[in-house]
Image 1 (cartoon, each protein chain N blue to C red):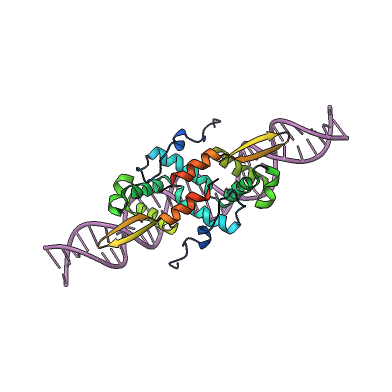
Image 2: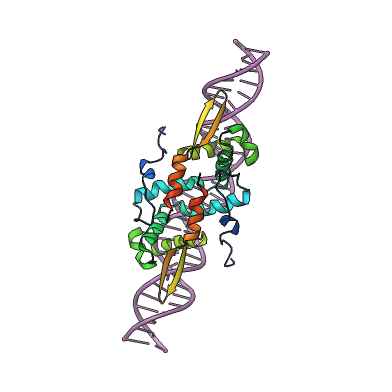
Length: 112
Length: 112
DNA sequence: TGCAGACATCGACAGGCATCAATCTAGCCG
DNA sequence: CGGCTAGATTGATGCCTGTCGATGTCTGCA
């Protein structure tokens, strides 16, 4: 597959609160994709571990989550593709941080 | 099954922003359940149709969504179980409204 | 009382996803 | 250079979920 196949769509960054106007099919699709990234207990705990630490290495995620290394790697990938976290490789380790802008969009979508 | 089997857990109503402290497994589970209700394009459009109208009958949902009546009924049920909408039967029709309190909880969880 | 319409439920099918073992890749150290 | 370790990728497996046709239930109306 191409490297950008599941990149977050630009339309996901532009939506006003859902009470303003019905979502288009395209917007609903990309937003559902973002919410799907949050619809897993492991990913929510992963995100909160990163958010609470500010920055966190993959090697410090497998133990608290109680999941195998491939599983954790899979979940970090999903969160990256949803634009919710960003990773930085430093030497042998990868450090993760939350991507505040995207989190902000998701939070604000449901504002009344 | 019992009528309350999939009711939203009380713990889902009490969570502070995820950056404050890592989520417990139980909280992560119930929150993931709520996000899963939003992780479908049809349900997002359904929710936005209801939110934009204030109140909406099931009979006015199948056409704009382009889904069959059983499918729409399934999705409204999922949103009700997530606490995101409430339904009221009046005569032969069922009218749906958003449940602001739960929507508020979901929106606020990601606050930085 | 009997009929028609609105909605829920059931059963079945297809597609997607979480998980792990095994393997691969890349950077560090002796 | 050779071994070691962190992390990504692959492939297989089992479960969950979206969808629809068929059917059931209840309400209003003639």
